[in-house]
Image (cartoon, rainbow, N blue to C red; front, side, top):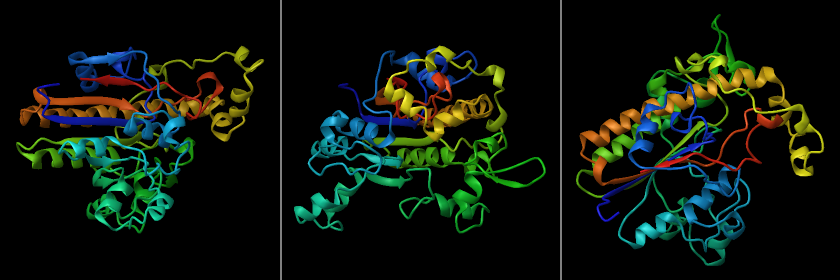
Length: 347
């Protein structure tokens, strides 16, 4: 730690710990993530404080449990009284840049009570976490003005008022017909954007650009991917890179449905679980989910090459993690709201 010059915190959204080569997946070729794990410390028994994006991320950013920081669901503001990683770094003369997702919501009531204007320097910092937002994109909805991704798509020929909806998470079938990627039956077809124009590629490039611009100045960066979270839409060649027989078998037994815990039984009535309980759904999604992970690993290879070229490997603390996992039909469950185990590999 005494030799640490830079800090890189990488987080994936909804990445299962067992879907990496370094954790034993027999087919996923996550060689860049695996190389990071081989160089450092791998955590084999790590737990998140919540299986929901927002609460889990606030725990990462504050170092406190969900019951302590109070953000108990998505879009619940983080209290103005909570100290975050960005603030701790700022107190020590460093800033924490962001490329990607945070789910941080401003505590508007707290700021109003303390008469802190949102447009003031302090107010702007409190509204962001405080991260220095290079490009914020929380995913799963059309990006707003905080992200340059829509403009980037239009610049590369994806002309639309809503290019994310119309191209990034829409697919095209073998006959050229367009379908919504929100419907999981459609994810067997490729996204309407090429890999270099995908969400994963775009945010990786934002991180690379920022690191290159720092020169010899110490930096701290949070690179936060929105994948492999749903909608499970992948560009070529990742949409069909893996076949079903290269996926781990479903971990579930009919006996699990008998005398289930009331909370689990109630959760199984949710739409996500009802759908993923059908093998046709899990069989369609699981190969594409693996493709999205492979895409992240491939683009992290470009980031690793940048760090090596700039001589940053030896003096950069790198932490790779996920905010939570994804059931993908295991135990007759879908999504993640009862899920607690992420994957963690750090150096």
